[in-house]
Image (cartoon, rainbow, N blue to C red):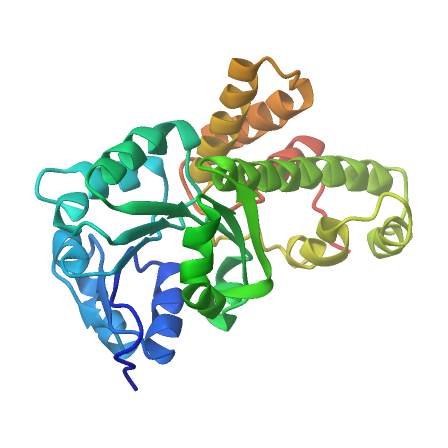
Length: 302
């Protein structure tokens, strides 16, 4: 049931992550106007309890809060800065919350333009994947003014686990923290796969090796949880390999610009880039491991 006390929301990007997030907001009583570049998404938006907007500008018009949940930086730039599009449609006093895994450098000029128009900006890229999006238990990496986060905390609590909505600091910090979280996960995936391939080649049963590693100082969320998918032959097709490479390129470029030694992370980036060259821009966060398996002539299956 709609709650007139809640802010009107424009929501742009109703893909695998965005659609369940949109549904949760509508279920909580928000009047949500949702848009996507794919008009065929209309029926799913209506089924989720939201109203369909034929364009990003239509979704933003009259919205007190605009949420963007898009594949990456270029899509955000296109939606927000195209003539007559979302940013121009937002009224002064509105808030733009970008929940995309984004580049701090590319968003900075968009944020500055928004603020000149009287639109306040909060970044809250998410972690947790589609299951967490459906359950409303996403991990939010928030950057921006603390008072703005406090103002919109009830809205964000609908989408994320309240105990995992973390304020990192000012503009850019939320994006950076999310990139670093993904960087470490990609790195753990590569390192774990290499260790398991060697262990199997040396004659150790993979299930036993996983148990040994999971109870050792080498344990990680990847070992304890994400190996289930890999052992089942699932390379996690909820995210594109090209997007993995895009994020890794963004974070390694940031390290180079700031003069931070980043040799291991550059190696992770190159491994994912080789996987992209091999398999193309297909879905699969763990396809870099498929490449290692192919090179070793082994499959990591218990």
